[in-house]
Image (cartoon, rainbow, N blue to C red; front, side, top):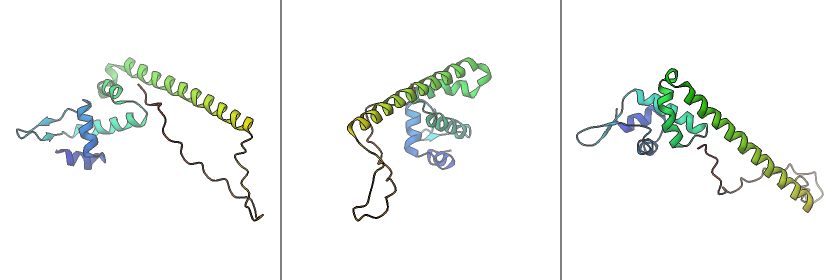
Length: 145
């Protein structure tokens, strides 16, 4: 199957599939004209790649895990180690985020910032608190390495 057919079958963009190949997550055959040719098994591989990305793994870790996922009975220790490391990293990230939230709340309280006191100027009922806009992305990369 061609790259467009794989994209349609998986719901993944052609650009993403090219990226997967660049990262050596997929290894399609090539025609004499240089066009990529994928096999039916690549649909399963792309689904696994998507699951691992959704779980927070970066492409270099995905590349290491794909062979073990193809035959987990051959290397269960590698999978346990990778997933254990992922859980530990996420728990560490959660602890760091919790600490940052506590520091932010403490600072807000110390400065007298009252987050839920929105009153209409005309003396009407209180407004429902507006959802906070998302914070801009900072320098931290929370992908699992």
